[in-house]
Image (cartoon, rainbow, N blue to C red; front, side, top):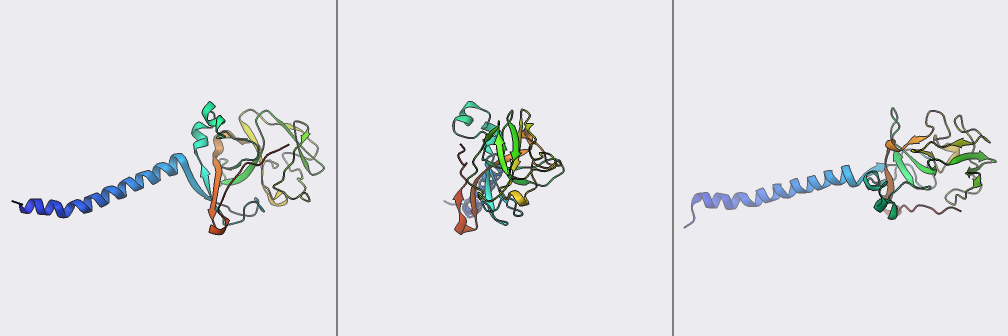
Length: 200
């Protein structure tokens, strides 16, 4: 024989189950946002033509936790030349740039081209007509050594990018990096995985 208490319990259960589902979904979203991936919006034209103002990318944060491990490096989670990263220098908003120089390397700009360890690198993601000019931090024809644990970054739109070439940005400390760009998902007609380019 069903009691009124049993009937009330049966009426409440679907609502409780719904609340439990919502809580679990929120917990999963929070976990993903903190530890796995987070969205970032392109602000400005410094990454043209690769990314346009207003586009939204998904940033892989697993590199923060596993990038330095042997496993992480074996599956490409470490930070490599050509990776597009999101970083925040203290006192600045989030910036999205491409890693050009790695820790311990030398970098020099000469005749509008980039030289790493005195070797010219190819950059197929920018037009051959674009020249990479020096700035207040890395002047034309001056070679700098990138400290261990630091990176040298630039935007793909070299004539309109405030990046490591300038004194107020300079070398980027690894601890400032928030993640590596993984996927462009907005606008929908531009959805694509973000692939690290190959260099000579």
